[in-house]
Image (cartoon, rainbow over all chains, first blue to last red):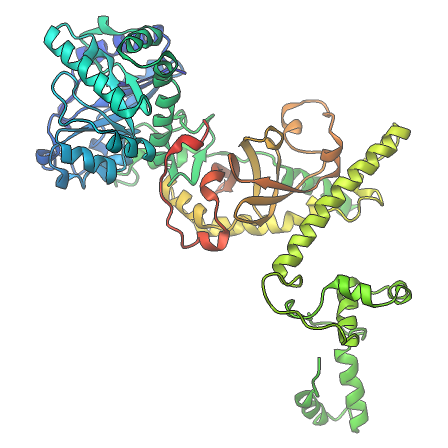
Amino acid sequence: MICDLNVVYPQTDFLVRPTARDLAKLKGCLAVLEQLGYTHIALNFEPQWATGSLNKQIPSDIRLLNPINIETDFAEFEGRLKLYSRITLKVDDPSQCQNLTRFQQVFDLVAVEPQTERALQLAITNLEIDIITFNYKERLPCYLKHKTLGSAIEKGIHFEIKYSDLLESDSHARAQSISNVKQLIRASRSRGLICSSGISSPDISRLRSCSDIANLLNLIGLDHNRSEQCFKDWSLKTLLSGRLRIKSYKQVVAVSGDESLIDNSLENKNWQASQKGVSVNAKMDVSSYKKRKADTAVDRVTKKSKPETTV
Amino acid sequence: MNRDNSIEKLILSRCSKYNDDGQIMKVLEERYSLTGAQKNFLVLEPTDGGVTREEINHSSSKKRRQQNSLPSIMHSLQNSQNSEKVEKRPANKHNPLKTKNEFKRFMKSNLALQAKIMRKLKLILKKNPHYLDKVKDLASLNLCNKILKFEDFIEINRLWNSYIKETIGSTENIMNISTKLSMCEFIGAYIEVTHSGCVDNVGKCGIVIWESQHNFVIVVPRKDGWKNKISLIEPKYSLSEKIGGIRLINKQDTRFKVTVNLQDNLTVDYEIIGDRLMIRSIDRANKKFKSHNVRDIRL
């Protein structure tokens, strides 16, 4: 199980749908990823606004919150790839983050891109998120301290390395991103990192298989075992925490019926569905998990005992 | 029970059926005696304070114990009235007559009994490998009559099912249902172990009879379980599966499946993540759960 938790969805606005050409390109991208051996892929929706100005743009209808419609747009990947949805919010003004809770039950993964040091602090201490990411092509918002990152990792928040930034053709940006990633690896002491492509569909040629990138990360200073874990164990842990937020109540009792806790094969993914005219969160709909009553030991024993009583 | 039954006496004296005091006394004595004919009420005695059963047995002579063929609770009640020399114990948590300790002892002795019967049967099978060939149900053996039977707990499971149906109602929201489930009582639920750090526990299923902070105690059915599900022919059961009885299952690193019955013969499976449920059921009702690092939950 190899994960790529960041494939950019070609949409930056809640209402403007991507064109058919964009979607076709994205599908090509997913097909390449499948060829490279990836199994779990998260489509990343990045609103163009930072939190300061985002609030006015968020639609009130819950059905419009998640533009990624896996059921209708990506039906051909069913059974081949496990697709998840992810949102990355740029946080500049920490006081404007109340809307984050609205996204938490709509997207499988919630990531935050802090743009100031205060935003980073807030994301670690207050917000219930899975991933913290940075724009590696530019300077980081602040010097990363081990203490802050350590507390985040302790909480279960993972830090993301985007390898497409490391393969940037602009040499200045590439140098900057290499130094940034080195800083992240140093500050996190090589723990709690996940690695993803961060690819946007035009540059498909930048996709690499996980062992290629493991070698690249090895060069930067992450040991080989951990760079493999970035794609496998730690990515799956991130996915697990994100999925449990949707499937369970505070990780105590989770709905099941599909094979594992991160699986979404039984989930209702049709965002256009509504119940009695009221828009509801399709992910929270239990009806797709329902199944016929199976024979349990209780039934078998009662059946066994019944003939005796009649005779 | 030291009472003069004054109220009852007064009421009965108005009755035309009894005309003298002696008759009334006789009726009342019979009514409240332990061995009397009419017993349409339940004697509930507090369990703390007093003496342990072991002490009673120890103090009373062997002969009397043999003579007494009464059921054990009555036996102890009678004896506690008679033997007053045994001093009273303080009502602290170590008092062996506290319900909790009494229950603990029962669990321990029952688990030990199961192990003992296993050993005995193994010995018998060594001498006579065909001993169990004709026995269809091990519960019919005289040896096993003290082991708890799955059949006796089906009624509690039926109760639990209707309780869950009532609490959940007609909600269609995953989150609402799991919120309610996390506050529910699980005694009586039919659970199945889906994942466990202890490989032996995987696939065990049964009705919960007790839930503590760290453990579920379940009663497992005889000759049933995961083997029945995966095989088309009659599977080969191990001795412990044939015996059944109670099993103590640790919550740590374990996930349990609970099936919730909804309307129209439809069910939804829910999974209890044992690591996050490490809290007694009485405290759980008011507990505010929090999300944690998922590193301890296995996929």
